[in-house]
Each structure stands twice: as structure tokens, then as C-alpha cells.
Image (cartoon, rainbow, N blue to C red):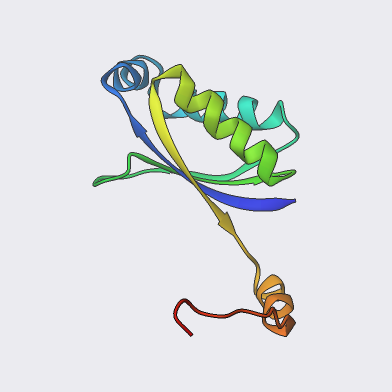
Amino acid sequence: MAKYLIRANYSVEGLHGLLKEGGTGRRAAIEKLLGSVGGKVEALYYAFGETDVYVLVEAPSNVTAAALSLIVSAAGAAKTSVTVLLTPEEIDEAVKMHPTYRPPGA
């Protein structure tokens, strides 16, 4: 399964929900969401600063990760950003590829 880093920021409505349910309640809801599409939460952390929540997840595909991001963002309680994570072995495969490329203006 692919791994993703999801960053989320709560709206005012989302913060009210967090205050009502607590951090563990929201974690359980996120675990249920991931489980419903065959994924899982590896880690979840709340943070100070620009991002409210960091979630490291496994999901079956990029399409699945996009669906999760869309459904959460469309609900309006949080805005998400998803980063695809690559293993060192995947980078090894990438550096062995030699695509043909011409830079702009070359």
C-alpha cells in the first residue's frame, strides 16, 4: 500500500467538533474513515503552528487518497493537503529511469 502524509487545518466548525469529541474521538473517526476504504492510520499528531493535524496513513492508491481528501474537505470542517510519500527503494527505481527531457529554451 502507498503511504501519505495528510496535513489538516480545522475550520471554526471543525474546532467546535474537536472541543466536543476530543482528540481521541477524532482519531477514532479518522481510523474508521481510512478503514472504510481499505487503509489505515499509522500515526496521528496534533500540532501548534500552521497545521492543526498531521496524519501518516496507508491507502490502496492515489485515487483512494484523493477521494479521502475530497470527502473531508467537502464536509467543510477541515481543509486537507496530501503528500505522497516514497520509500528509499522507490527512489532507487526512479533514479534508474532515464526519461528524455528538453528544458525550456534549450
